[in-house]
Length: 486
Ligand SMILES: [Zn+2]
Ligand SMILES: [Zn+2]
Image (cartoon, rainbow, N blue to C red; front, side):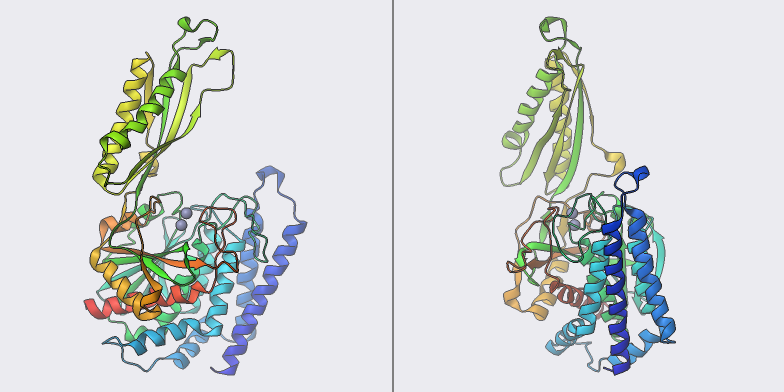
């Protein structure tokens, strides 16, 4: 690589690191804004903005616009192999591109900046800005905004076929318990599901695909979506046109169950459909010493909880995995009175839409009927208006086979696993309801590093060595899809 470009890249990384250190120091000295509780959002914005400003300044000093810089890099990196008929050498070329030290450094830096500055569902303003800045630097066109903070970027001929790759951008309302250099700087918010890594891998893929754009036999759509955790990000992206012309879609999720860079997936149902319910059971308040003068919702709610257990155990096919869990029960805290109302709530999961909506129907019937037995009434909310119902994620057999083939060629047969279905849920399922889709995992488990905790744990961490492999897998999936479907 041209030494001028190498020094440019290393100076970007030094500036980014300095900004990050400055931000970290300012966080240590900062006090939460009392008017906004523990909200450090002003801080995360300023950190990301400082980083962005440093990038701009860097470009100006080097008298090189992001556009020109990328163009220079591309001309140097233009691969020579013809991959119309894919070969082992093509896989190697993609992987080598992803593994170039400057690219790995860049992806890790991006992931660390996003990790240190987590933003919750539909608030991914600075994360989105950072992504757009990188896309600008690579001369990748995009549509923005979609679903508030979402981005739809385009690489390729602009002609069919169109294949999409998706990354989610949101963090979780969790306080990070991992002590490390790039720990979350925002109190009570954390990238505990690895969406920071998903963004870095998809930007990494954008770079590979842009470098190989002359090879592409169609168009790759890169979707950066908000609010996976809140459940309606994907749905809103679709209604804003994310899947326009798209004929297939793929996405990756990091997994602590597999060693670093091992890829896993399965054909058919992969993740469960997921819904939540909250039931308000109404009786009549009264003195606990004279229960006959009240109508007791505690008894009605208790009977409901017991009866709900019978739905899966007595009504569902044992070979069709389902779950109904009651997770909350609240009747107040007066020990001397029978309350007016009791609120119970929980979640339910199933692997087919039929089973899922059967569960929903039966949860309502059981609670309403059991309340009636004890002279109470009940109303149940399934939060359908807020779209917190996720359908099951079902991998299309052919799209799964495509992922398997690409992964085996990239990482070797020994590093691909057929995984069992899981009761977790993903809003990628909204895309998979519309077009053929495949969702796959990339391992981030490394006992030496301590990246052994599950997603949504405050101890969650990842082995960043998975990033280049994830980027290469994304890129190869898209490029090979276009080759084979033109
Ligand atoms: Zn999650
Ligand atoms: Zn996630």
